[in-house]
Image 1: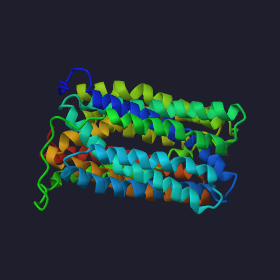
Image 2 (image 1 turned 90 degrees about the vertical axis):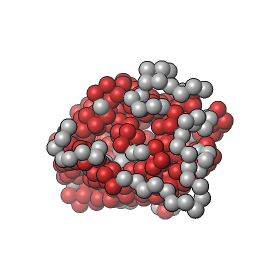
Image 3 (image 1 turned 30 degrees about the vertical axis):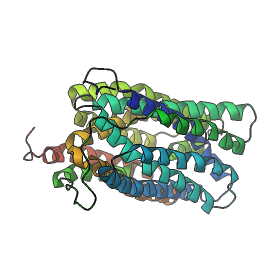
Length: 395
């Protein structure tokens, strides 16, 4: 399989990884949009439990992404890490159907995220190796489009199955089917043909350049604003939305993300990933400001749809920007650090957002996150020249 040029079709392995992500997110999002109401019906203090569950899960995922990133720079084969990670998640996720105690959702969700942590950094390093500079925005945009498209289809499946009268627990168990197909599809994934040769065991790895922390700093700050999207569903619930509307709202959000992600990748390749990331973070701040101000089901749905633009613009562009900043021999660890910082921040964001919501109200929680996101966008603009190895202020 020849390595793609900037304008050529995406390599087959990148396409297969996108399809695997689509199937995995169908499985995941047959569960996730039903989870806030499911937990609220069983446990008191649902905002704190939900925030703690998602924050802990993201922290666990981040630590494993850091570990797997280091391992990816040592390993001669990335495929086993990718397969193992997807398999762990596929096995753990349906167990949510058997939850009866408050600690069980934390354990199951964290195990699911262990799988995500093991696969993410090696997978992103694999995509980066298959696609040359100037085409990675498109590659990561495609991957995010498939990811978000799967989330939309999963939400649609959840809404349809609940509408047919199936119990929520039965829907959770049915999510095992697309998860298993995703793991089987990984047989078609191939190792990159062009990749930096790992250092032999015992020889120190090339260090991650210090200048990259000028990019990681705003990423970490933005992570403090970027709490779980489950709070969007909790916002709808607080405004009086019926449980049957939640999967449809999630479907709408994922559809917006999926429609925007791939075109956003082309835009990132054309004008630069950094500009797309800054624009996306600014949209996040505007969305959360809107969520702080609106107090009706229809207005909340409109802001959630607008919020989907942030995801579509930023998710692929953030990864493409990091791939362009990091030398090939350090790329696995660079992605690991990126995910680790994001995950640690997500734990703080999830617990903090839930606590602020409970004791100071939802509007204060959304407004605080909006302010942090705006500050993150400004910091990225200021520090990006340093991350590129240039003097501050230079273009």
